[in-house]
Image 1: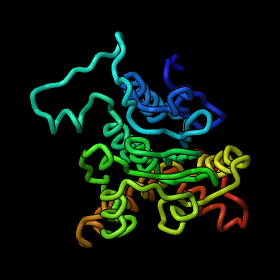
Image 2: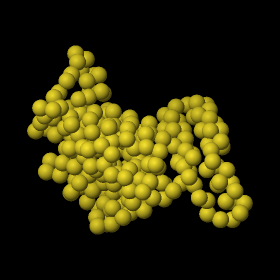
Image 3: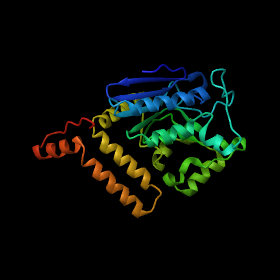
Image 4: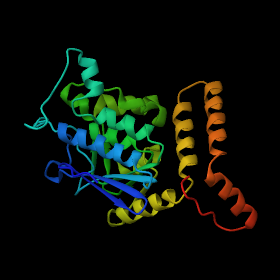
Length: 266
C-alpha cells in the first residue's frame, strides 16, 4: 500500500478504509489531500481484494471544507489554466474529481461522518453511497457566507429544490437528525458507536455479491436524473451482466439449498 501524508489508507480484511488525517485543521482540504484522496480511491478500485470502502476523518471533524488558510505547499503548488470554470471542476484541490471517483467506483463507499461536513467536506460526504453519522455530525454549504456560488452537487434530487436552495442561500448548518429526516444520511448513531456501526455495515456489504452491487450502483446513479426508457435500458444491461457472475449462480444455489450464500465477489 502507498504511503500518504494527509490521509491514512488501510486494508481491513475485504474493506479499504480512507481516513482524512489533518485533525489540526479539522481535515480541511488542501491540494496535497485532494491528490492523495484520488490516489487512495484508485487503489481501492484496482485492488480486487477490496470489496467495500469506508471514507472518514480523524478526530472531531469529518472535513471542514477547503483550507482557507492555504491550499498550497511547496510540494503541491497551485496550477491553474486560463479557464476558470474548468479549474473548478478539475482542480486544484480535486474534491470534485474525488466525488466522481466515488460515484464511478463499482464498489460500495460508506461515509462515516463525525462533526463538520462543510463546503467541500459536505460534497465529499455526499459523494459516498451510504452515510452513517454520529450525533455530533452537522452539514452545511457555507459558500454564500464568503459571497461564493454553489450548484450543490445535484442536492435537489435528494432533498428537493426548496431545501437545496435554502441551504445554498443561507449557508446554515443542519444537525445529524435533520439530515437523517431529509435522507442525507442513512443512520445516526451515538458518537462512541460510529466506528463499530460503520464497520459492521461495511463488512455486510463486503461479504455480498460485489459485482452485482456495483452494477446496481451504476444503474441507480445513471437512472437518477434520466428519462425512464434510458433508466430501464441500463437496468436491463446491469441485470444481464449480473446474471453471468459466479455470485449469481451461488445465490441461486444457496436459495434452493436453503442456506446462507457464500459470495466470492466474482
